[in-house]
Image (cartoon, rainbow, N blue to C red; front, top):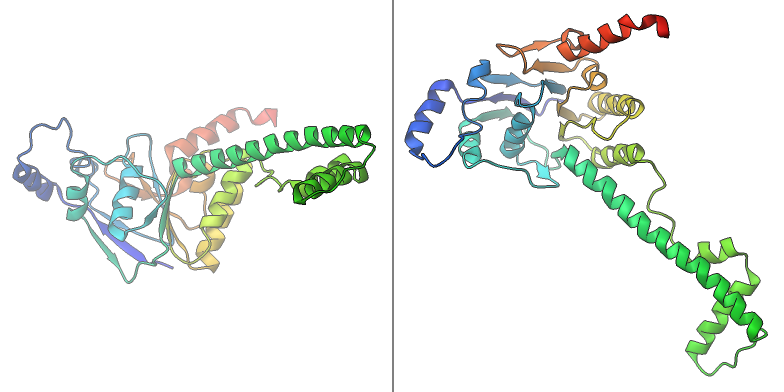
Length: 289
């Protein structure tokens, strides 16, 4: 599905006029002005899966943030804006039949925060587990000292009696499991990161993914590439991705804009410099496999 059809960036001429009209001289940079005219990039036509490829500083994330602002995508964290970002974004135009309300931008920082939150929650659960193990031993010791008998004078006595009774009548593992919620997840960082994407990409909408390969091993990058491809093909999702991962670049029928080229052009993934570097490296060491 192609919800977002085209992004038209402001021209070099219009940028210059706007800069002159701004008359602000206290800023050391007017980012994101004067980035894309230098690349001769004025228009982007989108496919079901569109990829921005390029090195650091090539403008990949900037384009995602411009698109995010134009389509009012859901954000899960803030991002750094320059004093001129809103002005620049206003000068750009998008062409779309409709923008699904659940459209989102998912950044590598969002994934990292999610992974760290899961680890934090699990560490608290693990700490409580250790407390329960110690409590089990204390309750058994208390039962032995009191010969398992407690006079009941109220609810507090009943609760204490029940805990002692459970400790003496159940195994340690059963005693702990019944009082402790299972860990939020038992996954590795990569599995948790992968789960973040599958939880958020769950309906037909536009998804802007900023370097989603971060925190993912090659295996999970392959899984994510397939999940993206299937979501676009079968569920009507549209993806706009910034990446330099050869795995994600290889998504079938993805439209790839090479932001390192001048002027910016679309290329096949096998033509990209980063991918060719991987190919040449493995070709050189082919006899090792």
